[in-house]
Structure formats: C-alpha cells, structure tokens
Length: 101
Image (cartoon, rainbow, N blue to C red):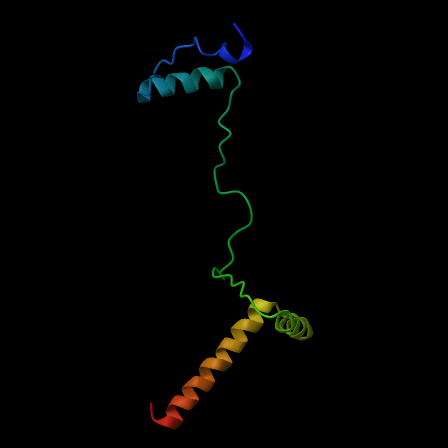
C-alpha cells in the first residue's frame, strides 16, 4: 500500500448531532481540560462610523494635491473630500435657486 492510499480504506460514519449527545461530548471534553476557545465577540478594532471608504482613481497630480492639502489642513483625505462635497452641494443649491430650478 503506498502512502497516498492509506486513508482510502477508512469509512466515514455520521456523527451523532442530537443536543444531548453534543452536551455529553462537551462535558467529557471540559472534564479532560478542553475548553471552548471560540471568541465571545468579534475580535479586532471597533468599526468606524465612516463606513463608505472611497478610493477614487484620479490623475497622479490631483491625488498628490489632495494629499498635500489634507496634510496642510491637518485632516484626513476623507475629511477633505467630505468638505469638498459640502461646498459642491452648497454651490449647486445656490445655482439652482439663481436659475429658478
């Protein structure tokens, strides 16, 4: 018998999945020092309230200008984009009022 076929002779048997059987197996495992190690809560950092991260494709010189301006203002690039969006919306609202739309 070569090494690749050693597991071929094993037969798969269905495991008992009744709640009583699972509880019994858990009790035996805990008695022998095996503890449940599944995480109780999601590990890692807490999610940010800003959930829609944007990664726009822009020309390199525009990306560098945005990064430089954000650094100059001491804010993140995302905060700068939010500020630019607020200005854009204010300008669009002002234009629409002027045009009577």
